[in-house]
Image (cartoon, rainbow, N blue to C red; front, side, top):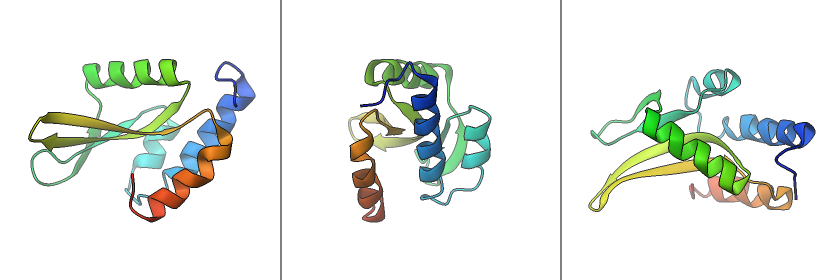
Length: 110
């Protein structure tokens, strides 16, 4: 298990996040993340658009990262019949599970 408070562990998690940002092939994600910006794919109006997080969404991401000791590298906003859902793609603290994330993404399981 990686220690979220150790700088070298955080750097490994960030490197894994950069690797994962290449999987969805969405232009601009790598550049934004390199600047410390987490973007959201907003498809609530029918067509998917990339935009910055709102203040409330940033709060949710920051809170999730602190509680889970993870790094969120992208979010997806989806409109459901129950309301809006913010999905967070993240790198977790359990490095031995990272390979499963890649396998799931190849099968289109985000």
